[in-house]
Length: 200
Image (tube, rainbow, N blue to C red; front, side, top):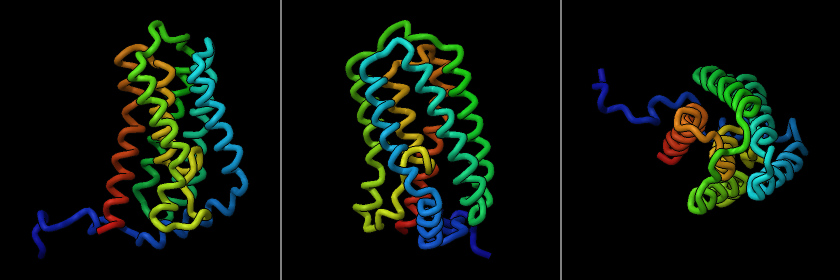
């Protein structure tokens, strides 16, 4: 029997990259043209956070909550779990993030102290990266029909969420940030690990 330390991440992958991208393609076709209004909504949310509207975070948190819940159900639970049994647990984490965002939007007011210029700039870059995420797949040679769009799949949704949270300066407390940032960060790490196995 092979020693456990000789295993690599690719040894634990239960599906081929081709299977995954075909799943994304079928998913995109099922919900076309939802991608277009989602990108438009993302631009509107980015603008709203950037101009520091008084009630911006409340609206943004509710909208982001809906996006996380949709990804949890439509992509992770209904589709990705058919080729990866662990996706059902990721779906539960996404549902938990949706609940956290909704709760934060209902109880948090405007940031007591606006974020600094550097923090806002970094948040803006992350949010823009979340919206431009489909270009990553295009650069890797995938057709547009396999594009991973904010609000439909996990990684761009997590990236965009982190960006808006930093840009809007919410939540103000360290405990609140730890709660709202943990699942998106873990999602990005999991996505990076999966992408790494695709390349090796």
